[in-house]
Length: 332
Length: 243
Image 1 (cartoon, rainbow over the protein chains, first blue to last red):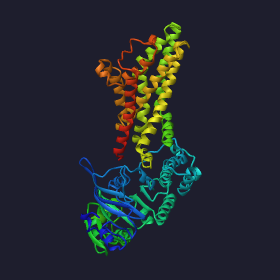
Image 2 (cartoon, rainbow over the protein chains, first blue to last red):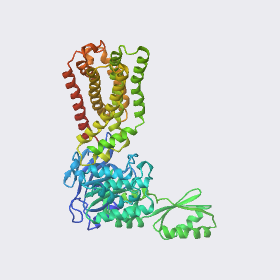
Image 3 (cartoon, each protein chain N blue to C red):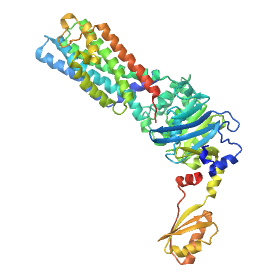
Image 4 (cartoon, rainbow over the protein chains, first blue to last red):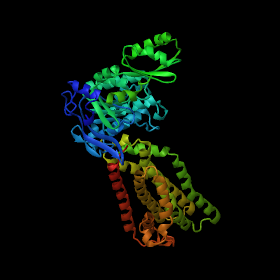
C-alpha cells in the first residue's frame, strides 16, 4: 500500500481484513507469485505509475481503477513489456525482463485490439500453442477454444469476428499453455452479458485451482463477481488493496449528491432539509443539489416534497453514480 | 522459428505493397522485351548486365527488400501484434531470424524471377551460364544484405522506416555513393557490384562496374552486413519496450 493512502476507506477496509497483508509479502498464507517493490515508471516528465508495491498469490485479484489510472502500465511492467524506471518486479521468483523462458508459466491477454485478421481463430490460438512448444497443439487449442466458447466458430477469420469474439480469442491464446499466472487487461470489454458471466466464472474457477489471476477492470460489478481481492489504482498510485466486499459496503454507505430540478427549488429544499439522511443542500436557479446519506429513501420522498411545496418536479439525477466519483470517494 | 516464419510470409504476401513491388520488378523485363524487339539478339547480354547494374541493383532490389523487411517487423510493432510473438518462450534472436528469413525469401524469389526473366528474354537464350549465375548470385547476396539492413530500420523506426529507407536508397545508394570511392565504401551497392564483378566473364565486364574490391572481400562485407543487422536487431528487440 502506498504510504500516503493509509487513511483512505479502502485502506482501512484492507487492514480490517485478516486475509490481506498490505505490507505485501505473503497473501492469504499462500506463496507469493508476483512481487512488485517500489516500482515507478515515467516517460520524461510524465509519471505513469509511482512507487508501486504489492504482492500477489494464487486466486483472483482485480486491478481496479478509472481510465488512465496506470492499470495497463502496471500489467506491462508485470509481463516485461515495460521496464521499471525504478524498483523491481519479480514473477515466480524471477525477473521478468529479458527472460523468455518465464513466459512458459505466464499468460497475457493484452488490451490492444490489434490481431492478425488473415488468421482464423483456431490458427491464432494454435500459433500461440506452437510458440509455447506444446506437444499436442490441436488438443491444447481445442481445450482453450471450448473454454471461451469459440470451438464451434473456430474457423472464422479474425478479421470477420465481432469485438467480443476477438476478445475471447485473445483469452484463448493467453490460457492455451495452461499458465500458472494469467494476466488479463480489460478482458471483458466487448463481450455480451452472457459471455461476461461465463468468462467471469472461468476466471473464478481458474483462481480456485491455484492459479494466480490478475484482471484489470474499470467495471466494479465485474470485480464483485470474480473475487474478493482488489488492488485499487488512482493517478498512477496504488491507492489501496483489500477485500472487495468491505469496499462495496463502504461504497453503498457513501453519501450521494442528487440534483432535483423543479419549478421552485427554494421551497422544495425547505421540505427536503427535514428528510433523514440529508446532509447539505445547495440551491441553484432551477434546481437543488442535495447531499444525502440515504439515497433510496431520498428518491422516494422527493415527489411528496415537491407536491407539498406546490412545485412542478422536472427531474431527479444522481451526480455521483459514475465510476470516477466512486473512486474519488474511496480515495479521499 | 517455423511458426513465425510462416506467419510473416502470409502477412507479407497479403501486403498491398507487394503488388507495387511486382509491378516495379516487371520494368526490367519489359525493357528487355523492348530491347529485343528493336535490336534483336546482338548485345543482349551486355544490355541485361547494364540493366542490372544501373536499374535493379541501385533501385529495384533495395526497394523490394525495403518494402518487405520494414513490414516484417515494423508492421507488427505498428499493428501492436508483436506482443503475441515476444511473450512466448522464444528467444529474440529466433524472432529476428524468422522475420528476416521470411522477408529475405519473398524478396529473393521476386527479384530472382525478375532477373532470370530479364536475362533469358534479353539474351534470347544465347547467354552464358557463368554470367547468368553471376547475376543471380549478386541478386541473392544483395537481397540478404538489404533485408537485414532494412529489418533493423523497420524495427528502429516502425512508422518512418519506409520513408527513411526510401531516402537512403535514392540519395545514398543511388547518388551520393557514386560520387567518390570513399563514399562508396559505405554503401551496400559497392559490394554487390564487387560480387558481380568477380563472377562475370571477362568479356561481359562493363565500364559501369568500376569497383576495386575482390569478390571474396565483397562477400565478407555483405556477410557482415547480414550478421550485423541480425545482431543489432536482436539487441534492439531485447531493449525495446512495448507501451
